Image (cartoon, rainbow, N blue to C red):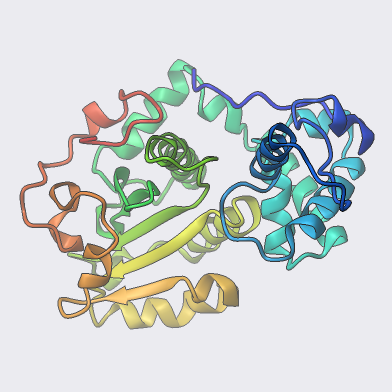
Length: 314
C-alpha cells in the first residue's frame, strides 16, 4: 500500500491554529522570537511549499484559508496533501472562486477514478499496471539537480491503445510515483519542504504517424495533467520529434493551455544539452536524453515492484 501524507482536519480558518497546519500565519508587525520565527517559516512551507510564489506569501496564505473554509469535512479529508489548495490557487492565477471550483472537481475525479485503489495493493490493479507497463512506455528514472523526478514517456511503445481506462490508470500510477520520488529526493537534497513538480521526457524515437494515440486518449491525458494535477509539471522535454510529429502536434497543441505550452521544450541533437544541464546524475540519463550510454536497460518487472518512492535504477 502506498503511504499517504497525513492531512489535518480543518473546520475553519481559526482551526488552523490547533491542527496539523500549526496555526494561521502571523502577519502583524510584532517582533517574533526565534522559536516563533522558525514556527512561522514551518507554517509557510507546510501551506505554500517551496515552489515559487505567484503572489505575496501572506496573500496566498489568506486565500488558501478561504479555499479550505469552502471545503466540506469530507473534501478536506480527501486532499492528496496539504499543498493541494495552493497548487489550484496558483493554477487559477490567484482566483479563489475558480480554485475552489477546480479543486472540488479534482477531488471528485480522484474519488470517481479510484486513485486510492490504483495506488493500493489490489491484485487486479497491480496486474493491470504490470500489463500496461510491460513495454516500458512510461516510467520514472532519475532526477534533476533539485530532486524532481524524471518521467520517461515513449509513445512508440504504446501497447494498449484499445483500453483507455487502463491506459489512464497506468499514467496516473506513474504520475503519483513521480510525485512520491520527487518528495523523497528533494528532502534528501535539503529542501525545507518537498518539491512538488516533476519533469517529463517524451522520447519520440521510432515514432510513426500510425503510432499516434486516438484523439480521445490525448485529450484525456491532457485533462488529467492540466485539471487534476495542476502545477505539477516543471518542464516537458520533447526529445527528437520526427517530421511526422508535426501533424500530430498541429492537432494536440490546440488543447494545451498557454501556461503549459511555455513549459514545453523541444530538443534535438543540437539542443539536448538543455536536458543534460539539469540532470542530477548523467549515468542515470538515458541516451535519448543525452546520456553517456552507461544507463542500464529498463526492466519493467523490476520497476513495478520497487518501493513507491524509488525510481528505476536509483
